[in-house]
Length: 333
Image (cartoon, rainbow, N blue to C red; front, top):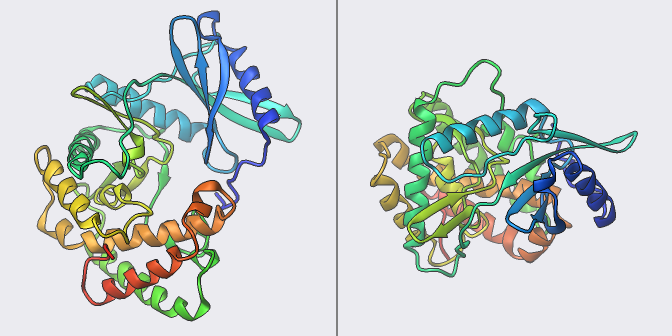
């Protein structure tokens, strides 16, 4: 695993891979191919006369085939519990993870999913949308705590070292753009405190397990009373309360984020329960996630999302570190 996970292929090359992938599926799944987005993976809309599908072409240097197949097994199990999540489709040879070869040294994995219907909420919606996010997250956690994984199940681990260490999955936070070296000492102090607190907190089964790890409003689909969850690409082993921190990713410094957190907790508590020990560490999980996204910002600095953060995002992160070190929740203006 390295931080060099950005997709280097251009639109034409990705389209060639998408066409190659679709040729492997039965005819009823083949249709027009349109690139929807290329943030981490490349996602294509496949439109037939009757249905729509989502083709995901995985970026390099991130997941093995076993990792991806493990993700799909969790999606199967969640579907059996009535949770609306994407389902992978078998190709003509019975495979759900297909291997594509563009050139001798260019290989990618791909998965074709059914289309999950619904509208994606944004941060501009009523804060009560975070109640829905909290409720569905609690359902995922309930399932995770009771689901028995076999020995072949393998997913990425999101712990303190893999998030904030120099060789973390998303790189080194020191490479974040617009970060002054004089501010490193503040961040390092915050990271040390986070590490001590999480070491004491531990990884018991009721606190740590399989989570979505990126369950923001952008990965929620609402249709009437039905809630769909998409994009399990980052799912892995971590603390359950990391999902709360992930829900407010990139936006921790905004003035109304405390409302989002309160609404998320309110929704979560209608389904699950946050222990006193977990509740006390919510500021720690929020701070850890913000610094994890600093590392992401450094390794993805040229992406549209990273550029949209502007030149003050790193300074805001330092300000939040100071709040955290002063025993305040690191959110808000």
